[in-house]
Image 1: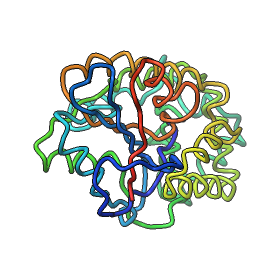
Image 2: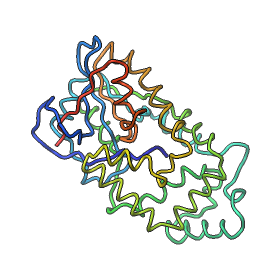
Image 3: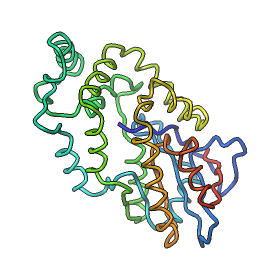
Image 4: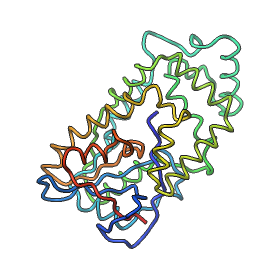
Length: 288
């Protein structure tokens, strides 16, 4: 779905807000432009091995000093998950078998049955892009994984912080209704047919994230393999602009901690550049 956020957050004793001259960090302080207290933006990765998720003192302090925690979605709300299940389906009664010729569909069905132990018949109405998530366990170097967002939510809950969302599930689902289902189906089958290549690309993203290398993340986001080339404005740039428009009002009232996919931080249309263009001071925070 969206760009995988990028990096392992390692434990450390670094206090806020020491700078990282090389910008090799996923944690950034937002100040200036009349803000009485700093807010923070952090780049996540939507799926990591559980053992790879360790939060630094700097990050914990940033969450503790915030009034609210903002994710892409309000994942703390059961209604978000329920609506997500309802919105995964394709419109107009489309089925997976309608998107492939007989040979391609047989290959897809065989992979889901033999490699994923999941009958494709149970998933007929699901948008192909959502089915890519079924492939992730095959790409992970571990058997136990979770999202960084889930770990952030647990941290927020422990600090009695309210979790909120910058978008709704309905909006995110609509993004994939804008991409032709046939194109999604093609990309799903390509990922299966070139699983070894998919694994290498996924590991490349993991490495960049664990090293907190925003420059490498930007290269990956802009690469042909990312899948963003044709839809970058819709999947990244417009959403970033919408978020900044919201955050200008949100941060004025209270300091917040913002956690979104790391791919949203980078580039000329990324959150760091857009916030700076609005007049905010956005500084890297050591996050080891």
